[in-house]
Length: 254
Ligand code: URA
Image (cartoon, rainbow, N blue to C red; front, side, top):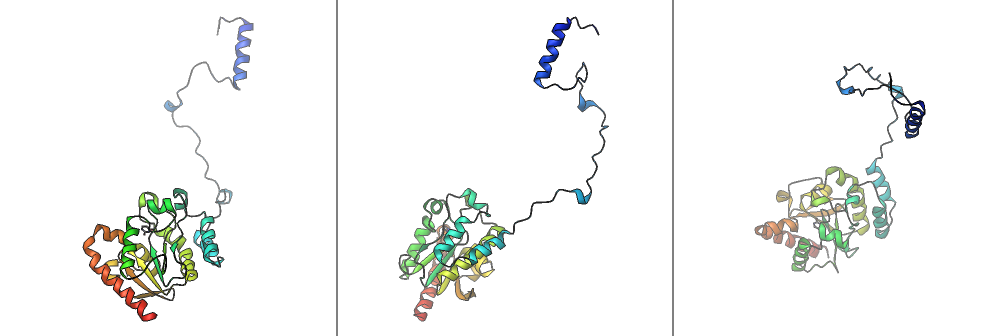
């Protein structure tokens, strides 16, 4: 085809294209390859033996179990949890919320998971529900600065305060069990369905509340979660009965 270019200009243009990265001359006119019939050869299924190896699955619960077991004190457990990177909740949270109150206290309370205030302060039950909890405890002469120790099933705030997922609870449970073993309370209080499920393996807080159960070699009493009591204040009457039950148990034991 007559291009109308002198050979020097044609050569300069060619060199310019090579400089831009052109390696093959394909054709003069553009081709709409989407409009072409599908003649591409079918990709061969790779033989099973040739499939790339999957990265080894990390058993997060087993890793948590190992990390928890190797902690010989509460500060060591805190450090082990802080270093544990396999729970996605950690990425969305500001910090680890480990515990508050008095280690070695006779009463250990297990809540659900940190909320916004707890995530900000790094301590469990410091928001509105926590303030109600403090008033409930004070009504039976308990106080986190003296005779109560508090933690949660999960140490990191779930995004938008959504319910913890069973796999998150399962993954972090070895840390909770170790936490309870190291804190050595006389009794456990599990607040709300999530902690009932995690500690006792049972749901149905309305049915379970106020009745002593047993887990990890300790007496356990399920109670309504204070956040629930803020939404349903008419349930405070039952919560008061449960607090008296707890008080009676402590009195009987001392
Ligand atoms: N609710 C919980 O269960 N735990 C907290 O720490 C705060 C609110």
